[in-house]
Length: 588
Image (cartoon, helix red, strand yellow):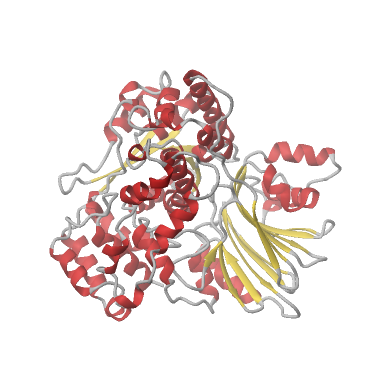
């Protein structure tokens, strides 16, 4: 896990290596263990290192192999790097390190850009060919590792974070109006390649972009989970297949030269990870849970269940309690750690959790992704049985934060587009071949967009803010493929994630499997009052917010007058949604 950056120029123009150097301090938390810069004339790469695999200096980046004529910068982890190394050695390659970075370098030389199809893991990387000047950018199948781009005439810059690109300078920071509408519609999600800023884009998941020396480029998607059914399988066969594939995914993510812990919320997903690690004989497993003070009639923790799991499996459990003295100061720090504005209230929780966990371990496994691939959210059951020609209406009703008509009464006219671009985006996705049922179509869209730019991005941004590497076994692409093929009725059973609950039976205590679905509770943001409400009010009344004038004043004042009534379709506080965007923009 690291931070990568670079500049690629066309023609006779040399890359601005100093601009690359300016990006690196903004990613120091992603890679606190070292840094490096490579100047290749028209191409310059930078890197911040977090030592997880091959702790020696032989694994440092940017990594160059002069004999092969290649240089690489890489963020992430290739879990099958040892197997690939063995295969490459049989083909005559020799290695000077024991890192997965060098395996990427050799794999690229052997198989070209198609090497990505052989990697099991999470990654974003750039490889430069010294002789041709071609640069290949790639991102993993589920978009677990980020890659932001800033393009201008004759030049392309990239970085692991958006703030790093801004540090290099010359970026258009005006608001992208299409992205703004998506933000207000999709629970703060802006689908790739857009971001909220006009001058920054992001490489979509499962995408390879090849940039030639003359500035021309090609882009292709190399993977997609298909929602097609295999031959007839019984429910029991599906259950066993899911259990075995998840067992494999958890095992893969133990590859490291440092200890690996688990973020234990007390829900089914993280509890199942602990159970599978215990099954394989993992002793002394470090687990971590966080809780907050109650507020607004809501509990601030799920310690009842995380304690149950920790005791049942005998983990080395760490219970982290957060009081108001730590909560409010963490809000600004959390916003600063966001590459894009993210409205989910548990961003603050993950930031605080990561701060304390990083003092104990450098790598954790986490349960993100299970709800999106096994249909665990409340908006999936209402889609069951809905005809495909009415699926978009049903999805919009359940998932959109607000309708286009409502948006027209909330955004100032200069920010409102003439068309409902968010609905058009969903229609285009639902209209693609495959995913024959409405549930399948929703799961496909959510796994490609919402999953990537909400829970996955949230975990990456908040853990890496403290130099903590988070691994997500539920997003093992082979498990995702299996889940996509699984009949919707098996996923929707037992109030959602039925097939996963069946797979957990006998491994995880029934009290956790059969409990009502919980969400990471953060009452301090779910229910705005006191100093937190003052912060929100000050943000929305700040001169910068008044000058930007994104929202109609009457809408803002109505929310401030009754701060905890206005909720999005998914239950988020609308006032926090507006304030979070302004907080993020004001700290650029």
